Length: 115
Length: 116
Image: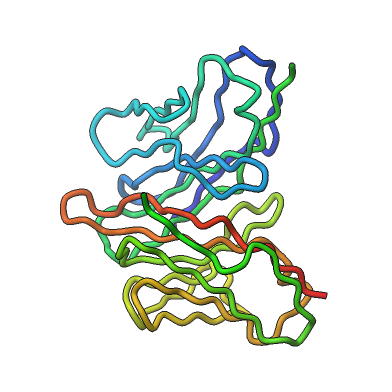
């Protein structure tokens, strides 16, 4: 069965510092991978996605993620965080081409920004 | 823009009541999903539907049922609400294209349900 692990429950970084949020998945084939962000009181917004091709994908708000098949990982990075990046971040995985497939989410990582 | 609309932002219901949560999407998406979100547990899939009148159980279907009579509408039903169903409920929809397969899911704003 597919699963997603986000090992860090809560991370605090200083404003302007770099960020890396970890995500590991379990799935037999290459899945579709997503990162979402949820600001307080808001719904989920897609940051970026990976289907195939270049393993380094660029997203909105200056985020990027790298797919590493050998490590079953899809870590999210940002070179310099801003106070507005404080939010909860979710990694998600879905099988590829089945039209009846579900998306499975990790437990989330809450990001706090130190002034 | 894709719009997924959940009928209520906040609901307070009594134990034992039958509760309906409604979700409507306006982009003709085939797939629709209901998740519940609890602190530290992330989003857990309750049910999903890949076509009208078609549904599949997710990871935590106990105590819930769903209805999809029209493509744009997906309802979550709590047959007899209990306090442990107090949670944030999120609806999502997604399309499936010939070229790319599945796309990302688009989410509604959520319904915060409190059962007292």
